Amino acid sequence: MDFQARLEALTHQLLPWSPLWSCSILQGWPESGAAYPEEWRAYARSLDEAGERQLDQGALVDVPPASLRALLGALEELTALPWHEGVHPLSVTERQGLSDKKTHELERVLSLLGPRTRFIRQAADIGGGMGHLARLCARTFGWTFHSIDRDAALQDKGRRWLARTRPSGGDTLCFIQASVEDGLQPRIDPLFSGQDRASIGLHTCGPLALTQLRKSQGAGLVLNIGCCYDKLELPRDYPVSRVGSAHPLPFTPKALALTTRGRPWKSDAEFARMKRVYAWRFAFHLLSKRHFPEQGFVRAGDAPRGLYDGPFAAYALDRLERLGLDAGMTDAQLDAFEMSVRAETRELLLCHLLRDRFARALEVVLLLDRAMLLEELGFQVELLQLFAPRLSPRNLALIASRSA
Ligand SMILES: C[S@@+](CC[C@H](N)C(=O)[O-])C[C@H]1O[C@@H](n2cnc3c(N)ncnc32)[C@H](O)[C@@H]1O
Image 1: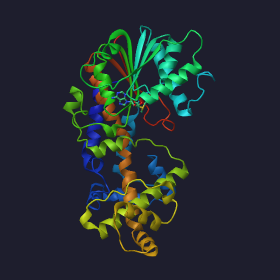
Image 2: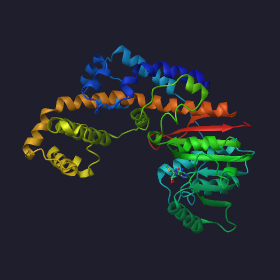
Image 3: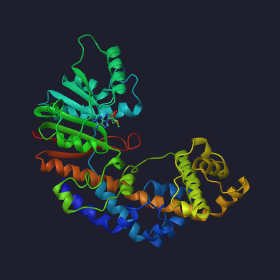
Image 4: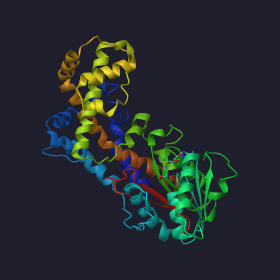
Protein backbone atom coordinates (compact mmCIF):
# COMPACT_ATOMS: atom_id res chain seq x y z
CA MET A 1 0.00 0.00 0.00
CA ASP A 2 1.14 3.53 -0.72
CA PHE A 3 1.00 4.82 2.87
CA GLN A 4 2.04 8.33 1.91
CA ALA A 5 -0.69 8.76 -0.70
CA ARG A 6 -3.26 7.38 1.74
CA LEU A 7 -2.12 9.72 4.49
CA GLU A 8 -2.15 12.74 2.22
CA ALA A 9 -5.66 11.94 1.01
CA LEU A 10 -6.94 11.42 4.56
CA THR A 11 -5.30 14.63 5.74
CA HIS A 12 -6.96 16.48 2.87
CA GLN A 13 -10.39 15.21 4.00
CA LEU A 14 -9.85 15.66 7.74
CA LEU A 15 -8.08 19.00 7.99
CA PRO A 16 -11.05 21.23 7.11
CA TRP A 17 -13.07 19.55 9.89
CA SER A 18 -10.46 19.87 12.63
CA PRO A 19 -12.53 22.41 14.67
CA LEU A 20 -15.17 19.69 14.87
CA TRP A 21 -13.06 16.65 15.79
CA SER A 22 -10.34 18.31 17.86
CA CYS A 23 -12.63 19.86 20.53
CA SER A 24 -14.94 18.54 23.20
CA ILE A 25 -18.58 19.21 22.36
CA LEU A 26 -19.71 19.40 25.97
CA GLN A 27 -16.94 21.58 27.37
CA GLY A 28 -17.44 24.23 24.70
CA TRP A 29 -21.23 24.00 24.42
CA PRO A 30 -23.14 25.75 22.91
CA GLU A 31 -20.38 27.51 20.92
CA SER A 32 -18.83 24.12 19.98
CA GLY A 33 -22.00 23.34 18.01
CA ALA A 34 -20.98 25.96 15.44
CA ALA A 35 -18.40 23.52 14.00
CA TYR A 36 -21.29 21.31 12.82
CA PRO A 37 -22.95 22.53 9.61
CA GLU A 38 -26.58 23.43 10.22
CA GLU A 39 -27.69 21.11 7.39
CA TRP A 40 -25.96 18.17 9.13
CA ARG A 41 -27.66 19.02 12.41
CA ALA A 42 -31.05 19.46 10.74
CA TYR A 43 -30.63 16.06 9.06
CA ALA A 44 -29.63 14.41 12.34
CA ARG A 45 -32.58 16.07 14.09
CA SER A 46 -34.92 14.54 11.51
CA LEU A 47 -33.82 10.98 12.37
CA ASP A 48 -35.95 8.62 14.40
CA GLU A 49 -34.45 6.12 16.87
CA ALA A 50 -33.58 3.65 14.06
CA GLY A 51 -31.99 6.42 12.00
CA GLU A 52 -29.87 7.53 14.97
CA ARG A 53 -28.72 3.95 15.40
CA GLN A 54 -27.79 3.81 11.72
CA LEU A 55 -25.84 7.04 12.03
CA ASP A 56 -23.99 5.56 15.00
CA GLN A 57 -22.93 2.71 12.69
CA GLY A 58 -21.88 5.17 9.98
CA ALA A 59 -24.91 4.62 7.72
CA LEU A 60 -27.01 7.51 6.41
CA VAL A 61 -30.74 6.88 5.91
CA ASP A 62 -33.25 8.93 3.89
CA VAL A 63 -31.77 11.95 2.12
CA PRO A 64 -28.61 13.11 3.88
CA PRO A 65 -26.89 16.38 2.99
CA ALA A 66 -24.59 15.90 0.01
CA SER A 67 -21.55 17.22 1.92
CA LEU A 68 -22.05 14.69 4.73
CA ARG A 69 -22.60 11.81 2.31
CA ALA A 70 -19.52 12.74 0.30
CA LEU A 71 -17.32 13.09 3.37
CA LEU A 72 -18.39 9.80 4.98
CA GLY A 73 -18.00 8.04 1.63
CA ALA A 74 -14.46 9.37 1.25
CA LEU A 75 -13.53 8.45 4.83
CA GLU A 76 -14.91 4.95 4.39
CA GLU A 77 -12.87 4.45 1.24
CA LEU A 78 -9.68 5.84 2.77
CA THR A 79 -9.97 3.83 5.98
CA ALA A 80 -10.57 0.55 4.14
CA LEU A 81 -7.52 -1.60 4.83
CA PRO A 82 -6.75 -5.16 3.70
CA TRP A 83 -7.83 -7.98 5.97
CA HIS A 84 -5.70 -10.83 7.18
CA GLU A 85 -8.14 -13.69 6.72
CA GLY A 86 -6.33 -16.70 8.17
CA VAL A 87 -6.96 -18.43 11.49
CA HIS A 88 -4.73 -20.80 13.44
CA PRO A 89 -7.33 -22.76 15.42
CA LEU A 90 -6.45 -23.37 19.06
CA SER A 91 -7.14 -26.78 20.54
CA VAL A 92 -9.66 -27.18 23.35
CA THR A 93 -6.77 -27.44 25.82
CA GLU A 94 -5.01 -24.38 24.45
CA ARG A 95 -8.07 -22.19 24.73
CA GLN A 96 -8.99 -23.31 28.23
CA GLY A 97 -9.57 -20.30 30.48
CA LEU A 98 -9.23 -17.79 27.62
CA SER A 99 -12.07 -15.39 26.89
CA ASP A 100 -13.69 -15.53 23.43
CA LYS A 101 -12.02 -12.21 22.65
CA LYS A 102 -8.55 -13.41 23.62
CA THR A 103 -9.00 -16.70 21.73
CA HIS A 104 -10.13 -14.81 18.64
CA GLU A 105 -7.10 -12.51 18.84
CA LEU A 106 -4.54 -15.25 19.47
CA GLU A 107 -5.84 -17.47 16.66
CA ARG A 108 -5.38 -14.61 14.22
CA VAL A 109 -2.02 -13.43 15.51
CA LEU A 110 -0.60 -16.96 15.24
CA SER A 111 -1.93 -17.31 11.71
CA LEU A 112 -0.47 -13.92 10.73
CA LEU A 113 2.93 -14.78 12.17
CA GLY A 114 3.20 -18.33 10.76
CA PRO A 115 4.11 -17.66 7.12
CA ARG A 116 6.11 -14.51 7.89
CA THR A 117 8.53 -15.91 10.43
CA ARG A 118 10.62 -18.52 8.61
CA PHE A 119 13.84 -16.92 9.85
CA ILE A 120 12.70 -16.25 13.39
CA ARG A 121 14.10 -18.29 16.27
CA GLN A 122 13.50 -16.00 19.24
CA ALA A 123 10.79 -13.50 20.13
CA ALA A 124 9.92 -10.97 22.80
CA ASP A 125 6.41 -9.82 23.68
CA ILE A 126 6.32 -6.27 25.04
CA GLY A 127 3.53 -5.80 27.55
CA GLY A 128 3.01 -9.56 27.37
CA GLY A 129 0.76 -9.69 30.44
CA MET A 130 0.09 -13.27 31.51
CA GLY A 131 2.11 -14.59 28.58
CA HIS A 132 -0.66 -16.33 26.64
CA LEU A 133 0.78 -15.29 23.28
CA ALA A 134 4.28 -16.21 24.42
CA ARG A 135 3.17 -19.65 25.58
CA LEU A 136 1.35 -20.38 22.33
CA CYS A 137 4.14 -19.07 20.08
CA ALA A 138 6.73 -21.08 21.98
CA ARG A 139 4.68 -24.23 21.47
CA THR A 140 3.52 -23.55 17.91
CA PHE A 141 6.78 -22.27 16.43
CA GLY A 142 9.35 -23.64 18.87
CA TRP A 143 10.81 -20.17 19.51
CA THR A 144 12.63 -19.09 22.61
CA PHE A 145 10.28 -16.46 23.97
CA HIS A 146 10.61 -13.62 26.48
CA SER A 147 7.40 -12.12 27.77
CA ILE A 148 8.12 -8.70 29.25
CA ASP A 149 5.69 -6.80 31.44
CA ARG A 150 5.96 -4.33 34.29
CA ASP A 151 3.10 -5.97 36.16
CA ALA A 152 4.66 -8.63 38.40
CA ALA A 153 1.31 -9.91 39.70
CA LEU A 154 0.08 -10.58 36.17
CA GLN A 155 3.25 -12.45 35.35
CA ASP A 156 2.95 -14.55 38.50
CA LYS A 157 -0.53 -15.53 37.39
CA GLY A 158 0.97 -16.45 34.00
CA ARG A 159 3.69 -18.56 35.63
CA ARG A 160 1.11 -20.47 37.66
CA TRP A 161 -0.95 -21.01 34.51
CA LEU A 162 2.09 -22.29 32.70
CA ALA A 163 2.98 -24.67 35.55
CA ARG A 164 -0.55 -26.11 35.41
CA THR A 165 -0.67 -26.57 31.63
CA ARG A 166 2.97 -27.28 30.74
CA PRO A 167 3.36 -30.61 28.97
CA SER A 168 6.39 -32.68 29.94
CA GLY A 169 9.46 -31.29 28.21
CA GLY A 170 8.35 -27.73 28.94
CA ASP A 171 8.49 -24.54 26.92
CA THR A 172 11.27 -22.17 26.13
CA LEU A 173 9.41 -19.31 27.74
CA CYS A 174 10.78 -16.82 30.19
CA PHE A 175 9.00 -13.98 31.99
CA ILE A 176 10.94 -10.78 32.52
CA GLN A 177 9.52 -8.18 34.86
CA ALA A 178 10.59 -4.80 33.53
CA SER A 179 9.15 -1.50 32.43
CA VAL A 180 10.06 -1.00 28.79
CA GLU A 181 11.14 2.61 28.38
CA ASP A 182 12.75 4.79 25.75
CA GLY A 183 16.52 4.97 26.18
CA LEU A 184 19.10 2.30 26.81
CA GLN A 185 18.05 -0.79 28.78
CA PRO A 186 20.96 -3.26 28.53
CA ARG A 187 19.02 -6.10 30.18
CA ILE A 188 16.19 -6.17 27.63
CA ASP A 189 17.29 -4.25 24.53
CA PRO A 190 19.28 -7.18 23.05
CA LEU A 191 16.06 -9.22 23.01
CA PHE A 192 14.74 -7.05 20.16
CA SER A 193 17.88 -7.06 18.10
CA GLY A 194 18.89 -9.63 15.48
CA GLN A 195 17.57 -10.90 12.16
CA ASP A 196 16.32 -14.09 13.84
CA ARG A 197 14.34 -12.14 16.47
CA ALA A 198 10.73 -11.01 16.42
CA SER A 199 9.47 -8.08 18.47
CA ILE A 200 5.79 -8.39 19.28
CA GLY A 201 3.36 -6.04 21.03
CA LEU A 202 -0.28 -7.05 21.26
CA HIS A 203 -2.40 -4.13 22.41
CA THR A 204 0.51 -2.03 23.57
CA CYS A 205 -1.12 0.88 25.42
CA GLY A 206 -0.46 4.44 24.26
CA PRO A 207 3.22 5.31 23.93
CA LEU A 208 4.39 1.74 24.62
CA ALA A 209 3.73 0.99 20.93
CA LEU A 210 6.19 3.68 19.87
CA THR A 211 8.76 2.59 22.41
CA GLN A 212 8.49 -0.90 20.92
CA LEU A 213 8.92 0.34 17.34
CA ARG A 214 11.96 2.45 18.24
CA LYS A 215 13.57 -0.36 20.23
CA SER A 216 13.03 -2.89 17.45
CA GLN A 217 15.03 -1.29 14.65
CA GLY A 218 17.40 -4.26 14.60
CA ALA A 219 14.72 -6.96 14.75
CA GLY A 220 13.97 -9.31 11.85
CA LEU A 221 10.24 -8.90 12.30
CA VAL A 222 8.04 -6.45 14.19
CA LEU A 223 4.36 -6.94 14.96
CA ASN A 224 2.53 -4.15 16.74
CA ILE A 225 -1.12 -3.73 17.57
CA GLY A 226 -1.78 -0.50 19.43
CA CYS A 227 -4.53 0.67 21.75
CA CYS A 228 -5.35 3.44 24.26
CA TYR A 229 -4.30 6.24 21.90
CA ASP A 230 -5.65 8.71 24.46
CA LYS A 231 -2.54 7.94 26.53
CA LEU A 232 -0.24 9.33 23.83
CA GLU A 233 1.56 12.57 24.54
CA LEU A 234 1.53 15.35 22.00
CA PRO A 235 3.63 16.37 20.15
CA ARG A 236 6.06 13.64 21.29
CA ASP A 237 4.00 10.72 19.96
CA TYR A 238 2.46 12.19 16.81
CA PRO A 239 3.70 12.72 14.17
CA VAL A 240 6.61 10.30 14.45
CA SER A 241 7.52 9.80 10.77
CA ARG A 242 9.18 12.28 8.43
CA VAL A 243 6.30 12.04 5.97
CA GLY A 244 3.77 12.42 8.78
CA SER A 245 5.59 15.53 9.99
CA ALA A 246 5.24 17.03 6.53
CA HIS A 247 1.45 16.50 6.64
CA PRO A 248 0.52 16.95 10.29
CA LEU A 249 -3.03 17.13 11.56
CA PRO A 250 -3.80 19.32 14.58
CA PHE A 251 -4.34 16.42 16.99
CA THR A 252 -5.36 17.36 20.54
CA PRO A 253 -5.94 15.19 23.64
CA LYS A 254 -9.65 15.31 22.79
CA ALA A 255 -8.96 14.03 19.27
CA LEU A 256 -6.79 11.23 20.66
CA ALA A 257 -9.63 10.22 22.97
CA LEU A 258 -11.91 10.14 19.92
CA THR A 259 -9.64 7.63 18.15
CA THR A 260 -10.37 5.08 20.85
CA ARG A 261 -14.09 5.25 20.05
CA GLY A 262 -13.89 4.00 16.49
CA ARG A 263 -16.10 1.09 15.48
CA PRO A 264 -17.63 0.20 18.78
CA TRP A 265 -20.41 -2.03 17.47
CA LYS A 266 -23.38 -1.85 19.82
CA SER A 267 -26.43 -4.01 20.32
CA ASP A 268 -29.83 -2.27 20.57
CA ALA A 269 -29.57 -2.44 24.35
CA GLU A 270 -26.04 -1.00 24.36
CA PHE A 271 -27.08 1.84 22.09
CA ALA A 272 -30.06 2.62 24.32
CA ARG A 273 -27.78 2.57 27.35
CA MET A 274 -25.27 4.90 25.69
CA LYS A 275 -28.11 7.33 24.97
CA ARG A 276 -29.27 7.25 28.57
CA VAL A 277 -25.74 7.79 29.94
CA TYR A 278 -25.30 10.74 27.59
CA ALA A 279 -28.74 12.15 28.42
CA TRP A 280 -28.07 12.17 32.17
CA ARG A 281 -24.54 13.47 31.76
CA PHE A 282 -25.56 16.28 29.41
CA ALA A 283 -28.54 17.31 31.55
CA PHE A 284 -26.26 17.38 34.60
CA HIS A 285 -23.83 19.57 32.71
CA LEU A 286 -26.59 22.04 31.83
CA LEU A 287 -27.81 21.96 35.43
CA SER A 288 -24.39 22.68 36.91
CA LYS A 289 -23.76 25.40 34.33
CA ARG A 290 -26.99 27.12 35.29
CA HIS A 291 -26.67 26.77 39.07
CA PHE A 292 -22.92 26.87 39.58
CA PRO A 293 -21.52 28.96 36.73
CA GLU A 294 -18.56 29.96 38.93
CA GLN A 295 -17.42 26.29 38.99
CA GLY A 296 -16.60 26.27 35.27
CA PHE A 297 -16.76 22.84 33.61
CA VAL A 298 -17.86 20.33 36.24
CA ARG A 299 -16.89 16.70 35.61
CA ALA A 300 -19.81 14.43 36.47
CA GLY A 301 -17.54 11.38 36.28
CA ASP A 302 -18.73 7.79 35.96
CA ALA A 303 -21.71 7.11 38.19
CA PRO A 304 -22.56 3.63 39.53
CA ARG A 305 -24.30 1.73 36.72
CA GLY A 306 -27.65 1.50 38.46
CA LEU A 307 -28.02 5.27 38.65
CA TYR A 308 -28.45 5.46 34.88
CA ASP A 309 -31.41 3.08 35.11
CA GLY A 310 -33.34 5.25 37.57
CA PRO A 311 -34.71 8.80 37.44
CA PHE A 312 -32.47 11.76 36.64
CA ALA A 313 -33.00 13.16 40.15
CA ALA A 314 -31.27 10.21 41.83
CA TYR A 315 -28.31 10.47 39.45
CA ALA A 316 -28.04 14.25 39.84
CA LEU A 317 -28.25 14.16 43.65
CA ASP A 318 -25.53 11.51 43.78
CA ARG A 319 -23.24 13.53 41.49
CA LEU A 320 -23.94 16.80 43.36
CA GLU A 321 -23.13 15.17 46.68
CA ARG A 322 -19.90 13.72 45.31
CA LEU A 323 -18.92 17.17 44.14
CA GLY A 324 -19.94 18.80 47.44
CA LEU A 325 -22.59 20.93 45.72
CA ASP A 326 -26.21 21.61 46.70
CA ALA A 327 -28.63 22.95 44.11
CA GLY A 328 -31.42 23.17 46.73
CA MET A 329 -33.81 21.33 44.39
CA THR A 330 -36.31 18.59 45.15
CA ASP A 331 -36.44 15.34 43.16
CA ALA A 332 -39.46 16.64 41.28
CA GLN A 333 -37.66 19.87 40.40
CA LEU A 334 -34.60 17.99 39.17
CA ASP A 335 -36.68 15.68 36.99
CA ALA A 336 -38.60 18.67 35.64
CA PHE A 337 -35.31 20.34 34.80
CA GLU A 338 -34.17 17.30 32.83
CA MET A 339 -37.47 17.32 30.88
CA SER A 340 -37.05 21.02 30.14
CA VAL A 341 -33.61 20.54 28.52
CA ARG A 342 -34.40 17.43 26.45
CA ALA A 343 -34.27 19.22 23.12
CA GLU A 344 -30.82 20.53 24.01
CA THR A 345 -29.49 17.20 25.32
CA ARG A 346 -30.68 15.53 22.09
CA GLU A 347 -28.84 18.15 20.10
CA LEU A 348 -25.70 17.31 22.09
CA LEU A 349 -26.22 13.60 21.40
CA LEU A 350 -26.59 14.21 17.66
CA CYS A 351 -23.38 16.25 17.56
CA HIS A 352 -21.63 13.34 19.31
CA LEU A 353 -22.96 10.87 16.77
CA LEU A 354 -21.65 13.10 13.97
CA ARG A 355 -18.27 13.63 15.62
CA ASP A 356 -17.81 9.89 16.16
CA ARG A 357 -17.77 9.48 12.36
CA PHE A 358 -14.21 10.83 12.41
CA ALA A 359 -12.86 8.36 14.96
CA ARG A 360 -11.70 5.57 12.65
CA ALA A 361 -10.12 7.98 10.16
CA LEU A 362 -8.09 9.62 12.92
CA GLU A 363 -7.00 6.22 14.23
CA VAL A 364 -5.89 5.22 10.72
CA VAL A 365 -3.86 8.45 10.46
CA LEU A 366 -1.95 7.51 13.63
CA LEU A 367 -1.27 4.03 12.22
CA LEU A 368 -0.20 5.32 8.79
CA ASP A 369 2.27 7.62 10.55
CA ARG A 370 3.70 4.60 12.42
CA ALA A 371 3.77 2.54 9.20
CA MET A 372 5.85 5.24 7.57
CA LEU A 373 8.20 5.45 10.55
CA LEU A 374 8.87 1.71 10.08
CA GLU A 375 9.41 2.22 6.34
CA GLU A 376 11.82 5.05 7.10
CA LEU A 377 13.68 2.62 9.40
CA GLY A 378 14.12 0.28 6.42
CA PHE A 379 11.31 -2.25 6.98
CA GLN A 380 8.79 -3.59 4.50
CA VAL A 381 5.49 -2.84 6.15
CA GLU A 382 1.92 -4.11 6.02
CA LEU A 383 -1.02 -2.46 7.76
CA LEU A 384 -3.82 -5.00 8.11
CA GLN A 385 -7.15 -5.49 9.80
CA LEU A 386 -6.74 -8.52 11.99
CA PHE A 387 -9.60 -8.84 14.49
CA ALA A 388 -13.37 -8.69 14.06
CA PRO A 389 -14.25 -5.18 15.29
CA ARG A 390 -17.25 -6.45 17.22
CA LEU A 391 -14.97 -8.54 19.40
CA SER A 392 -11.86 -6.42 19.38
CA PRO A 393 -12.31 -2.93 17.93
CA ARG A 394 -8.63 -1.92 18.11
CA ASN A 395 -7.97 -4.34 15.28
CA LEU A 396 -5.21 -2.78 13.18
CA ALA A 397 -1.92 -4.64 12.96
CA LEU A 398 1.40 -3.28 11.75
CA ILE A 399 3.68 -6.06 10.62
CA ALA A 400 7.15 -5.19 9.37
CA SER A 401 10.03 -7.31 8.25
CA ARG A 402 13.42 -6.93 6.64
CA SER A 403 13.32 -10.23 4.79
CA ALA A 404 9.77 -10.44 3.45
C1 LIG B 1 -3.54 -3.86 27.21
S1 LIG B 1 -2.47 -4.89 28.10
C2 LIG B 1 -2.10 -6.12 26.91
C3 LIG B 1 -1.61 -7.39 27.52
C4 LIG B 1 -1.38 -8.54 26.50
N1 LIG B 1 -0.43 -8.17 25.49
C5 LIG B 1 -2.68 -8.95 25.88
O1 LIG B 1 -2.92 -8.67 24.71
O2 LIG B 1 -3.48 -9.55 26.59
C6 LIG B 1 -0.99 -3.95 28.18
C7 LIG B 1 0.05 -4.56 29.05
O3 LIG B 1 1.21 -3.76 28.92
C8 LIG B 1 1.84 -3.62 30.18
N2 LIG B 1 2.63 -2.39 30.13
C9 LIG B 1 2.19 -1.14 29.94
N3 LIG B 1 3.21 -0.28 29.87
C10 LIG B 1 4.34 -1.02 30.01
C11 LIG B 1 5.73 -0.71 29.99
N4 LIG B 1 6.17 0.54 29.83
N5 LIG B 1 6.60 -1.71 30.15
C12 LIG B 1 6.17 -2.99 30.31
N6 LIG B 1 4.87 -3.34 30.32
C13 LIG B 1 3.97 -2.37 30.16
C14 LIG B 1 0.69 -3.62 31.16
O4 LIG B 1 1.12 -4.03 32.45
C15 LIG B 1 -0.28 -4.61 30.52
O5 LIG B 1 -0.05 -5.91 30.99
